Length: 153
Length: 126
Image (cartoon, rainbow over all chains, first blue to last red; front, side):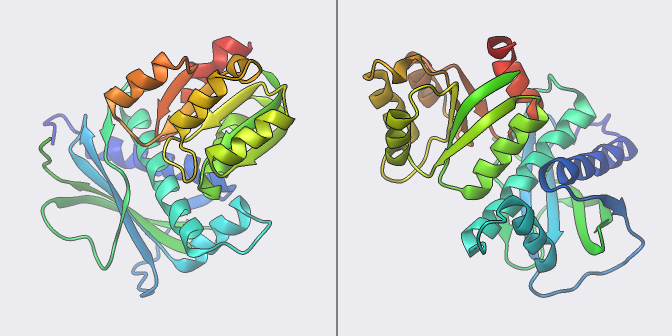
């Protein structure tokens, strides 16, 4: 992690990224939520590794209801299959990470991101949770977190 | 920025919709969107819709992938005049060199954003 990393600036940048991405891509308003745990066993947990310029990981926990909402908006003409649902989570997470970097560093940021991926169960391993955003998408609680992870590449 | 016909090629329907959304947000006013799941289907559309303003394609797709689709299109007098934008997760410099040699108008590495579309295409369609 870069020594000059600013947690509050990152929190603001990630929140704005999630709100902007949801508003633009799935026409959904997102607000900070005071709700605590979301423990639906069918939640989708996915993450994307940012290797450069920060060594971090963006993690999202989306309940099934939220993914169904994505599908109703993105693909309204037919019932979505599992692949389409998975794609929506990964695509949105990819955009959230990109927008987060833009919000934090500006448009000309030289970045390197890995492909987003799903996790079965909680995200574990090396790294430290920097902060967690408990959010609400028009009545559906979900969570996005930023973790500090030291990557080598 | 007005465009009459845009063809979006991606085997993920979600990706196709997100590309369309980014174009809309970037301020491209597109009259007709056309979609294909792979390069083979796209070639069929190009033959019928001869006056496409822009093609946006993924790289990895079943049947005919993005680079092969572009190569085939280059052999066609009508197709080779259509601007092609490649949007992909692949960050392979050899692949990028190959695509540039094929004459693509731009390559955007995901994550896609309206700002990246404007930066890559804005000058062409002002």
